[in-house]
Length: 467
Image (cartoon, rainbow, N blue to C red; front, side):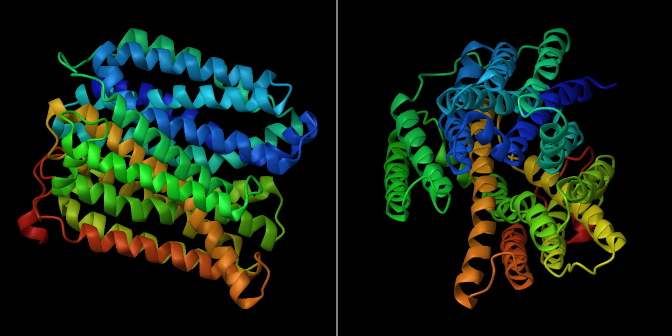
C-alpha cells in the first residue's frame, strides 16, 4: 500500500471517530436527559459546547502543529478526545457532561485539522486527490450512520456506550500514528497570534451559540440575536486585525487565491445544502412517514454506500474532465437530487428512494473530494498549516449552518402557510431551498480558470478538451 494511503487511512480513523461522535449524541438526548434528570432541551448544551470548543481551537491547530510537530500533536489530540469521551460516558450530571464535551472539542479541533495537515505535507501533489478520497468517505459516513448507531446503542445497550466506543478506536489511532506516520513541522512557525485567537475564537463561538440557541430553548430570541451580533462585530474586528498582523491566525490573504476562495465560498454554499441532509432526511422519514429510527437509518445509510463507490473513481473523473467542469456539474446534479428528496412521499417505493440516496451519496462525495483538493492547488508548503486551519473553520461553520438552515426553512414554511412543520409542503420547501444553495455554489465553481487543479489528480487535467 502506498505511504500516502497508510497515512490517509490512519487520519481517516480519527476523522470517522470525530464525525460519528458529533452526530451520534443527537439521537440519544432524550435518554440522556432522563438518566440525568434534566429537560431534554437543556441537553442541547452538550451539542453547543462541542461546537463552541471546535470553533475556538481550530484556528490554533496549525500553529501548534508547526511549533510542536504534527505527529505529536495528532497523537495527543486523539488521546485527549478519547479520554474526554470516556469521561462523558461516566458523567452523572449535565455540568459534567458539558465539561467533557468542551474537552472533546479541544481534542477534535486539534485532531482533524492536524491530521489533514499531516496528510497534505506527506503526500505528493499528484496523489493529493487519491489521498483525500480516503478522508471524504468517513466524513460522509459518520453523519449518516451516527443517528442509526446512536439509536441502536441507546435502545439495546445504554447511552453511555456511544462515548465509550471511542476508546478502542482512539487507542488504535495512537498506536498506528506512532508506527506509520512521519513527523512533519515548519522550521519557523513564527509568533502565535494571541489577539487574533481571542477575537476569532470569541467571535465564532458567539455566532455558533447564537445559531444553536435560536429556537432550541437555550435562550430567548433577543439573546440569540445579541450573540450573533456580538460575534459578527468581533469577526469584523478580527478582519481589521488580520490586515495589519504579520502572521494572523486565520490568514484572510489566502482568499486572494482563486482556487482557495472558490473552495471556501463555493464550498460553503454546497456544504450548507448537503449539511442539512443528516437533519432533514431522518426527520422526514420518521416524523412525516412514521418510520422507526432503525428503518430510517437503514435507508439513509445508502448515501454512505454511494460515497464508498466514489472512492476509486474520483481521481479518474477529475483527471478526465477537469476540476471546473466536475465541480460545476456535480453541484448542479446534487442540487437536483436534494430538491428531489423533498418530493418523496409515504407511498414512494423504497427502491426509488434507495436508488436516489445511493446516487446522491456518490455525487456528493465526488464533490467533497474535489472541493477539498482544489483548495490547496495554489498553496505553498509554508502556508499549508494556515490554509488547513482556515479551511477547517470554514467547513465547520458551513456544516453547522446547514442544520440551522434546514430547520429554519421548515419553520419558515410552517409560519407563512400555517402548516405543520412536518408537512409534505414544509419538507418540499426545505429541500428545494437547500438545493438552491448548491446552485449558488455551482455558479462560483463555474468561474474557476479552466486549468484549475491541473495535475492534482495524478496527471494534468485535459482542460483544453473539456473547456
